Image (cartoon, rainbow, N blue to C red):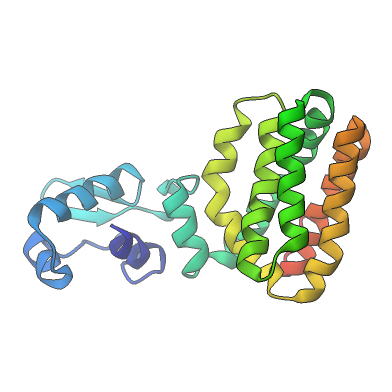
Length: 219
């Protein structure tokens, strides 16, 4: 599934392409018929493939891909679509995360604040980029969870792989992590203090800097 999905989003099988028949796919990928059919079933559900009478299996137009599917978003970011999706993902984050931070300042429980503090502490003590990214993701997801709006938590789960790619690009420059840490601390402090307006503005600043760090300004 992953191999075929990457081949599609990377353009090896462009939209409109009729996929090789089952026998060819089995030979090329060295898997069982059951595994191949299951992979195709999943990719069809993700919006990448469609079965057309007298045509066969065809790659759907990019507009039909479910980019909020964690697998599809991750493949798209990693294999050729980053320049397209990164600014749009940060636009979506700007619509959601500042207000989520404001809600967290109002509604976060003690336990949720502890999770947020732990995530920040993990960022502060990270020994490498991978650790930093893990705790950075945890920090932002903790804010969504602390907002008191259960509908925001699945959103964080959906865009996690896209965020991982953005954070990887940003954290590859040590200067970015240097300025980013105090900005996250400012968000944490505002939420702990219950200052919704300050939490919202400080989160907005993080997203602005994130866009600058990856070279795509949020309009």
